Image 1 (cartoon, chains in turn purple, orange):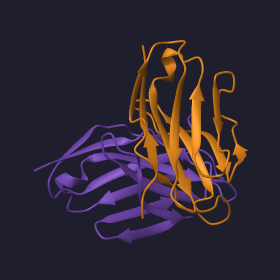
Image 2 (cartoon, chains in turn orange, brown):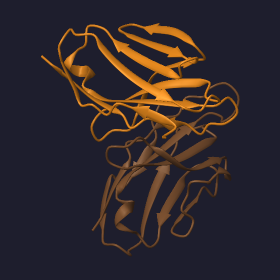
Image 3 (tube, helix red, strand yellow):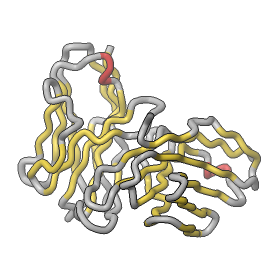
Image 4 (cartoon, helix red, strand yellow):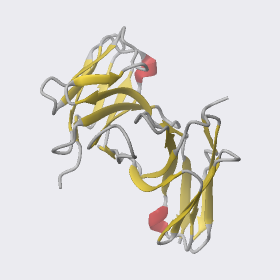
Length: 111
Length: 116
């Protein structure tokens, strides 16, 4: 079993749709949970990070962490064509900076 | 603020050849990371530097990969000799400090390596 599992997609939605991206993990030591966005031929860029369980909202993006289920989600409201990218979940423990990434979900938002 | 710079952006070599990648982190960032991202997978950490010292190289294939950060700023990652399975994007990232609360890692655009 991989430490971090992420549905690779691809996912295609119409503009304005609500998008849900999900990851599961097996290592209970993970405490920081991140979502990165990666455009084609670019490096990943941090979208959001959360510490421990709960929700965090930033504009159209909401990150959700459920440590009891070892499950994290990213919701995108009112999706735009500019949101078309690969979304990577990542997580790390408290005492190191060795992030473990999911495989990424490729999202296409159609105008 | 300038981002993480990497060169070259693309490299094509034949198997058993050598190749080197260069990274210049964001000014003032003490921690530097090299990741390998194989097509369809997430980035995998190869090596982490704190200033010019190695913090973690547990996933670096040391029989063929080497990396250095001699003056605590720029870094070079080398592969010698390359294998077909080394075809990937090599990402460099930097952060202010490695430990304690989360410190954001900033990624460069990567070097896309194709081994024929």
